[in-house]
Each structure stands twice: as C-alpha cells, then as structure tokens.
Length: 237
Image (tube, rainbow, N blue to C red; front, side, top):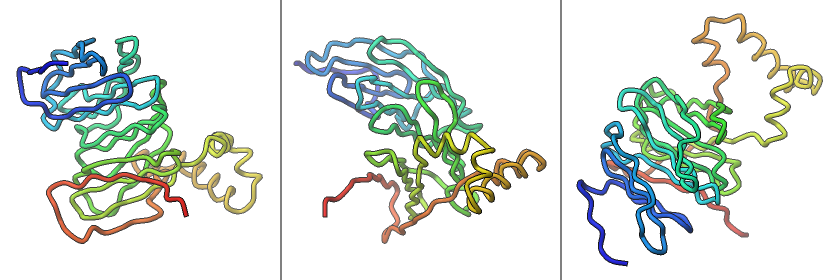
C-alpha cells in the first residue's frame, strides 16, 4: 500500500469497512481502505486542535467534524457520495466530544462547558434528547459512547465520574410527541405531560433546564488522569 505523509501532525485516525479517515488540525483526508487511494480532502477547516472527528461503521458512512472554533457547529459529511448533507448547530460553545451510534443515525455532542449533552437524529439533524451531565458548573468531557443497541449513552470527564444516560426507544419518542397520549397513560405519564406543559409558561432558560434528563447511573474512576476514554458492551451471562 505504501507510506503516506501529511503536511501536519496526525491527530486522529478513524476507519470502517470501506474507509480510512485521517484528521489533521485544519484538514481531513478520506482514503479507500483497500487501496489507500485518497478519495476526498476536507480543506480550509476551522482549527481542530484536538482532532475531533467521528465516522459511522454503518453503510451510510457519515463523517462528523466541527466547522467552527468558536461555536459548537458540525457538518454531516456523506463519505460515500462525498458531500455535506447537513450542518448542525449543536451548542453555543466549541465542542469537546462527539460520538455516533453503531447505526450512524444518532449523534451525541458535548461542548467545552461540559454540563449538557445533546443527541441528534441523522441525517435530519433534529434534536432528540438533552441530558444534564451533573451538578458541577463546568467540566471537561473527555469522551462519549453509545451502547451497541443505542439504548444507553455514557460520558467520561475530568471529574473522574462516568455518567450513563438511558435513551428512550423509538416508540417512546413517538409517545412523548403526543401530549394527549401522555396525559392518558396513568400517573407517570400525567406528571411528564404536566412538566412539559408547565415549561411553556416558564422563562426560556428555566424551561430548558426542566426538560433535561439526568443520568440514571454513575461510576467513579479510582484514579484521576489527563484523559479517559469509555465504551459500552453487552456481556453474555
């Protein structure tokens, strides 16, 4: 295959069954995994000093990367047809972490403030969920990861804490979209309906906080480190 060199330091390498993606600070190089032929180069990018990039393992081959060094905007690049299919303004602040699920249809993002984690649908870019990471005012999110079945999302940070969030199923998402159904499904659904209805009458900032979900499980890392990476797996018992 030969040896390839680049104009600057390599910050990240991602691959799936058909592609190899090499990330530099201001460019991304997309290669065919079998021949290493360069298929496309994303040039003139905003500075990406941490090499933030994620590539889906599915046939869709979505490539996600930040497009601003001052805000949390990302492009959704179709690495098969070599074109940008969506731009998403995920956060007001620059991004700290991004992650795709195994199907390539959910994107998780966190900004450098580290308090809110958002999940978007791809390729539409619709915001589906918003999670509150914890009570710490600011934290540096190190990594995000989905479970294989996209039922869970976890995060690690410089606070030595791992947070695990539960993602509602597709059916539950549809149920949330219908206030009438929510109001007719018993006490829990009624309280959910009431909180979302009350949010309409609160100041916008308080309304957003009310609608954020918290983690349902946490774990504390025994040792503080400069970086922590996480993954979720399912054990057969």
